[in-house]
Length: 92
Image (cartoon, rainbow, N blue to C red; front, top):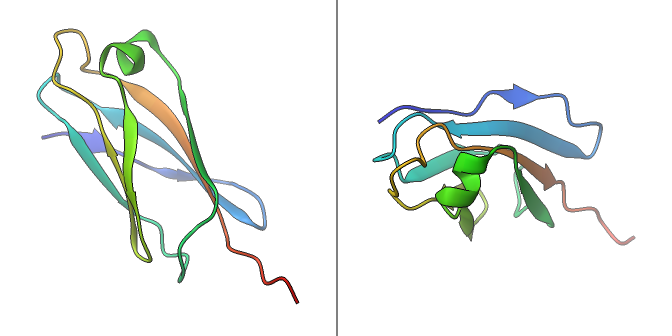
């Protein structure tokens, strides 16, 4: 399994990653976000055709991880998405 998810600058209130699955058979990417709470909202954008072929979806967002999945369709290797997680802000 070869999934890369380097963190990129995301601003003061967000974290941003580019998540890439290397192989068709790679299906689950677990990204530890380190936000110390459940990030709200979490968005991702498909960056290439392989991400559409793999039907990338967000499956879990909890206090420690964001989990993305894709199917193992032929041609889905190399799928890349940009993932952005926003820090939960106090309403006070």
